Structures are given as structure tokens and as C-alpha cells.
Length: 196
Ligand SMILES: Nc1nc2c(ncn2[C@@H]2O[C@H](COP(=O)(O)OP(=O)(O)OP(=O)(O)O)[C@@H](O)[C@H]2O)c(=O)[nH]1
Ligand SMILES: [Zn+2]
Image 1 (spheres, rainbow, N blue to C red):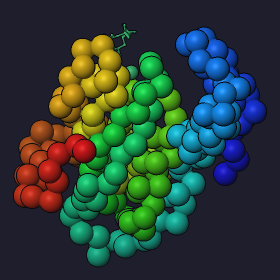
Image 2: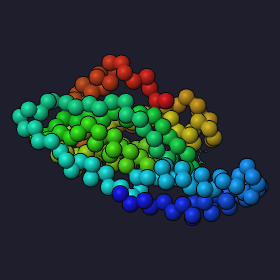
Image 3: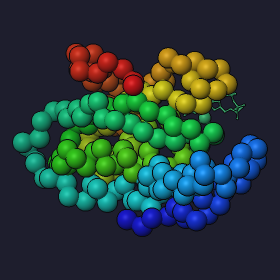
Image 4: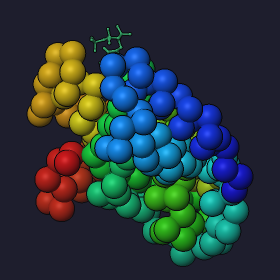
């Protein structure tokens, strides 16, 4: 993994930003802020230097032993909206019908994180997760359900503090509404209390 965030450049930009809003970046209160924000940006945008497919290289062959459905639900979703550079946060639920292989369970949140820690829109993020899993696991089907609250919707503009956006991206047999219904039924059986 290579780090692509240039801390010095971010810090210089934040200093400019503080000046632009009429604040004094040299005041004791704000003197460390540009460096702190730069450090935060290395976390927020850590996915920029990552290849999400690399987390799927250790697929576990299972052949006829493969179960019918794998659902990894209630993953923490953290991303950054590309329009306003404000966070959107919630949950990701990933289902797939395996082909000849499955993948270690921890690989799935790593794929989600690598694609989420970039400037994103929710719909594209869901599609990219679905496509990465479809390419890397050759499953019979994939379904990615994301539910998130967007800072740009809750804290500015329309200021809808409770609005949750739900998106679905699917591939293969899980693009079929009847098969999707089985996943939605499982998701409806408790566990998640919605985006947080
Ligand atoms: N489809 C989609 N829209 C998003 C997402 N995140 C933010 N948006 C929307 O992107 C739009 C950006 O609209 P613009 O007109 O360019 O910016 P704006 O004037 O700040 O928009 P308002 O939020 O309506 O004030 C807004 O409607 C946002 O709510 C996302 O993940 N998916
Ligand atoms: Zn936004």
C-alpha cells in the first residue's frame, strides 16, 4: 500500500482555508490545526493508494462444499462525499452466492474500506464494491446494500438530519429480484438498527 496523501500540501491548503474564513492560523488555538487535519486526511483518504482486489487474492477453494449464500452484515461504512468533502457514514451489508471459492471474512470489510476511503458518491461506491467482488471471487452473484447518513444532507443545505440513503448494487443471480428478496428477508431479521 502506498500513501498518496501529501501532508504538507494538505496543511498548506488548510492554512489558506483558515485565512479565507477570516481566522488566524497563527493563533495558539489554531497553530496545530493544519497539521492535524493533514493527519486526518491520511486516514480519510487511505484508500487512494490501495488496490481493493489485492484483498481477494487468497480465495479459499471450496468446490461442492460451498454453501448457498454468504451474508456479511452490519459492517461499519465510512466515506467522504466528493461534492463537499463531508463524511457519509452508516452500514454496509454484503451478500454473495459463492462459485468455486469463498474468501476470508475479514477481506470483505477491507475491500469496503479501500473503496470507501476516497472521494465518493454512495451509488458508485456500492457498484465498485460489487464489481470488485464479482471480478475477484467469480461468485454466482453479489449484492451490496449500503445505508448511510450524509453530512452534506444533514448539516448543511436541506439539513435533513435523519435522512438515510439506501443503495443496492448487484451482479449475477443476485440481480434477480426473487433472489434479492431472500437477502432482504435475512437483513430484516434483526441485528441492524439502521444507519448510525
Ligand atoms: N446521488 C448522490 N448525491 C449525493 C451524494 N452525496 C451528496 N449528494 C448530492 O449531490 C448534490 C450536489 O449538488 P450541487 O448542486 O452540486 O451542490 P449544492 O448546491 O451544494 O447542493 P445542495 O446540497 O442541494 O445544497 C446534492 O444534491 C447532494 O445532496 C451521493 O452519495 N449520491
Ligand atoms: Zn456532499
